[in-house]
Image (cartoon, rainbow, N blue to C red; front, side, top):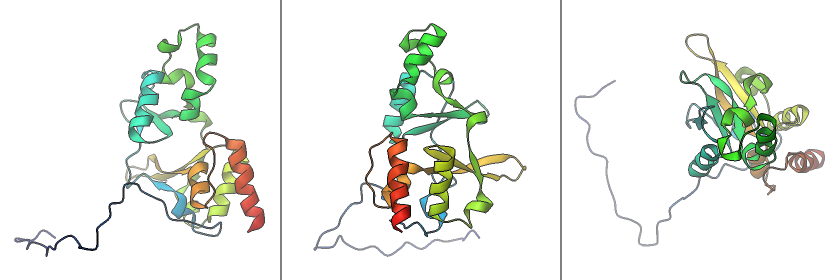
Amino acid sequence: MTRANYPALATGAVSPAGCFVSTSLTPPPVRLDSPALQVMTDLTRIPAASIAAAASVSEANQSMIYRGVRMLFVVDDAKQLQGVVTASDVLGERPLQAAQNHGLARDELRVAHIMTPVARLDTIELSMVTRAEVGHVVATLKACGRQHAFVVDRDAHGRQVVCGVFSATQIARQLGMPLPTGETARTFAEIEAALAAA
């Protein structure tokens, strides 16, 4: 309801004992039996980082650095999902292989050459996630052999939309396990050890 008048909120001074600034979003710690939603990046609250398939590989790398993310959604002009590209895709062997396969110089490579296409992405229905625990998500990522899984729902028009993302690295961080980035096998080995110890 819109009000005719909005009174000002009460203000105060900064505390003489000191005031601190939070410079990063630290996700809350979780356990394997915590609700799965606690480890999901909610794309209804945080805008998805995206890029066009025609963008260069170096543009994708710069975009990830600028946004502080390790994955970009690849979308067309209508924002329809075409695939994903990760930091591992950009910085790993994939660009070299793609350059050889297509007979291109590295600076001619486009995101389309190295992305994981939409047909190869794994999704989980939001209705399942709302009833799941962190341990279920870890087991799902391991079964799929993926670093990420995408949570989908339907919009008002009945279209499937990605509404959340699970990241093995983020889950490990929230479980309190510092992990090397980009090493999926080690990530799952360490998370699996936590599962066994729980």
